[in-house]
Image 1 (cartoon, helix red, strand yellow):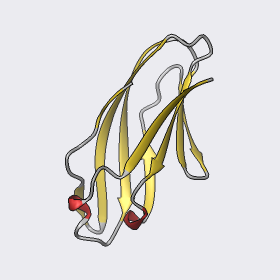
Image 2 (cartoon, one colour):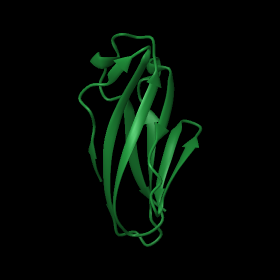
Image 3 (cartoon, one colour):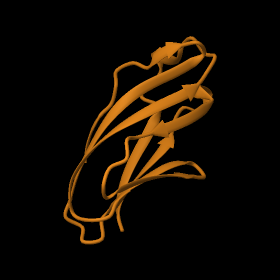
Length: 104
């Protein structure tokens, strides 16, 4: 799994946002899942969106989001993160999302 994380969050009107490019090459017969969890709770609410893509499903879970691929292959997914924050120092934070991958 390769992930390109932004160096800074874009901030405007009390919101912070960023686009992340996630590339997964899987040889797992039943696919994979990527867990995305917020590592910076001070950023307030978090919304994650991606364009619909064949074989990929994004679902909210209790501590973040889960992105799953249903078959072997290479996946390139653009993720749009939006954080609700009134903190003007959001740009000074490290990338606020932890990413873990697992086989299913």
